[in-house]
Image (cartoon, rainbow, N blue to C red; front, side, top):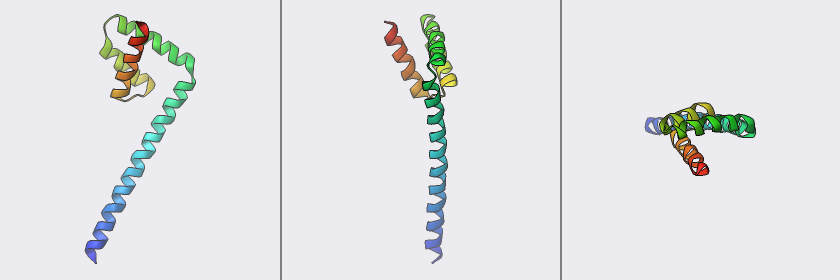
Length: 88
């Protein structure tokens, strides 16, 4: 009986952890959506990021994109790659 209780407790803790993680991700996505709706801010950021790319500071551009736009490392890299492609 106690084994079943222990397993149930572990499952409940795991599920609670997943819910908290998912809530955090939803908040991040909501923040990104707000930024995307506000195009003037994005265009100002894009201008600064393009300047960094022209100076050969791609890593700094990725870091700036991540900080300002709230992106993950992969999302920041992809964002900078798209900007570089649009510049060519």
